[in-house]
Amino acid sequence: QVQLVESGGGLVKPGGSLRLSCAASGFTFSDYYMSWIRQAPGKGLEWVSYISTSGPTLNYADSVKGRFTISRDNAKNSLHLQMNSLRADDTALYYCAREVVGVGAHYFDFWGQGTLVTVSS
Amino acid sequence: SYVVTQPPSVSVAPGKTARITCGGNNIGSKNVHWYQQKPGQAPVLVIYNDSDRPSGIPERFSGSNSGNTATLTISRVEAGDEADYSCQLWDSTADHRVFGGGTKLTVL
Image (cartoon, each protein chain N blue to C red):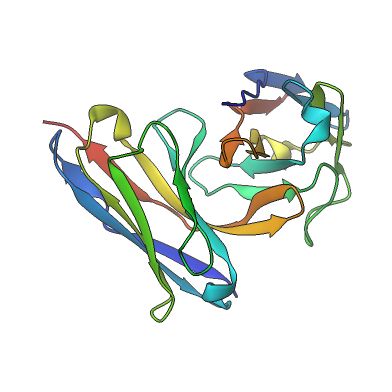
């Protein structure tokens, strides 16, 4: 069965860095786009970043562009998010999600349980 | 970038029909997807490509999309349907994935 397990969250001071990881299993990881999606406490879902199957294509939400870097290691079935210059409004539960790509459609059919990032002094 | 709007809350009595909307400029030209999220749980895909249901999702869940509004319809609502529902689409211009703000469905 498909499993996505995030790790790497924690408490970090403003301006600090954190690296999130997502371990994938139960499917051919290299066949799928992957995304990070976050949810601030009590708020809605916010897409953060995506990466294509082999990584040459990626993009970021405007709110994180220039500060976050997405990457993947298909040999290790893992997805990563390097987060630099963290701010208080980056505080959220960060989900890793498998992305299905169709004609004119990109959606998320499996999600991990999330890892919590708290940015506070 | 593209903006989608959802009502913050919808209430419905058990056994009735709930309709949750997702508004956007000419959203009918885009593929809209819907997620259910219960407290403390990860989101679950309930409708994709406007009206398709993943395996395991009850037929009570259906979707439509036309003009400036996409709609998630839940028929014969049950207490277990109480959750937050979010729409999502792909903004091809920016190559961004966009979520609506979410709608809390309350079963009275």
